[in-house]
Amino acid sequence: MTDESGNLSIDFLVGFTIFMLAFIWVTSMVPGMLIGLKSNTIDYDAVAYRTGVILVEDPGWPVSPPWESYSDGQKDEITRFGFAVSKGSPNIISEDKINRFFCSSFIYPDDYHSRAIFGDYNYFFNISVMDVERNQTRSVGDVLPDGYGYIRRLAKIKGLSNTTIGQSQIEKHHYNNTENVTTHEFSVVINNTKLLGDITDPAYQIDPARDTIIINLTDLRSTIKNVTPSPSTIEVKSDTVAITLSSIKVYRWDSGVLSMVRLYDKPYIDGRNIPDTPPVSNIKDNVSLIINPRVFDIMQAGYSQLYINFTFNVQPQSNPLSGCTFLNNTNNLKATPLGSFSYDYFPDNVTQPRLRDAVVEVAVW
Amino acid sequence: MVKDGGQLYTIEGVAAGLIMLMTAYLVVGATSVYTPGDAHINDMQLEILGSDALKMLDTPQNYTDSKSPLQQIVETDDGSRFWLMFNNTVNNRTGSIPDHIHFTANYSYRMTADNSINSSFINASRNLTGGEHAVRVTKWVIVNKKLPGSATFQDRAVLVEVLLWRD
Image 1: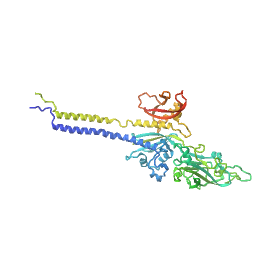
Image 2 (image 1 turned 180 degrees about the vertical axis):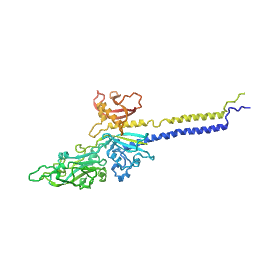
Image 3 (image 1 turned 90 degrees about the vertical axis):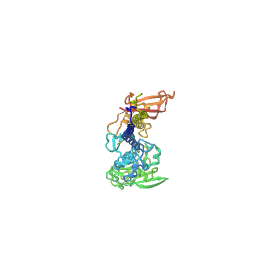
Image 4 (image 1 turned 120 degrees about the horizontal axis):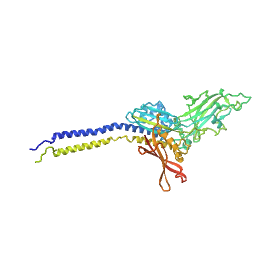
């Protein structure tokens, strides 16, 4: 008779096989579970990278007029944030866009998630931008936890162009008129076609349809000078003269025709934070215009030549007999160049856009 | 007569052996998945930083500047300026604590006489010992320079190459 000791029974073999198959299946599941845990950090880094690229290399959407010029009431029309001045100039980011991105009208996290982070998962995040030259850091988001996905991008902030027409400019160009009039007109010309043609690199271009431009008229009272006081006339003291900004008219020059297209109604007077609507009386010394790109879009003047004419009323009237002058360049043969002040690439006239170092950091968890 | 005590009978033994082999194979194969999936994330971040830094150094501040800082550095062999600018740029963070990235930089150009490649050292924040896990970033720059010194001034393309690593 055959000795059966040491043999495996069919029952045992079947049981062992089932056990081993189950064991293999469970074992093969374990790495998958670990990958699932690990992939979160990979995902966070990927999302942070994607957001960094969107912010630094993309101008956002809409592009024209740029999203940053949209008011709080129109913010639903903004579909994507982006800091780049144009899609052709990555890492050159716009000061206007950064200012708008960090303004209080956007609410964390919803407004930012849908326009910069994207995705269905409700990520927490923190986005910060540092202006190295000004040592100014702005950020939006939560406090960073211990572990998070991260990206750091280096960029240049394109500063805003601006012009300050003060006493030196006024005397240099003979903008102080001595005509016997009470109404004085000072004109600034913005030739968009020339601005876009003279410099084509968006990093250095003055493009009023994309970037805010700033015009400051200062030292208004200093232009009231007693140039030829005569013993036969009463000398006018500059501090007794009442200056009124009657209006700011915008004219467009198209095909040889000059037509008024609108009244500009948001000048900042004497450094006040809220704009006034002309006529504004009792101006002490300065008038500033901070012209949003949307203004050019509304006028469809992105490629036009615009004249911005400031009309001042001065009482008592200025005239040579009373020895008084005031800012005026529209009817003054002495003015150099003759006529309007040009907002252009001449550094003596306009402070040009300048690039400043910046750091953009995105953390996602 | 041969005793069969202690033996496995053919089919059962072979089946059990195959199952165990398959198990071992699957388990060993499965463990290889444990290789960290994010091992190259740090390299990628460092590479992006280095590329951005070189790009920023190669961007003039104003349109009136005809040459970028990087062009000026290569043309004048101003290694200390490179150290200052690159070190500040690449280690800047939005917080108060700067990063601690080290680098070594040089540029290469083609020798027109024999088509060989010549390299010149620019500067380094620390000597490379060989143990560092460094990433490499490059930027082509056009410079007006005598390359080599015995040649005449002319526009030449040079490849600026930077190795970056963290402690």
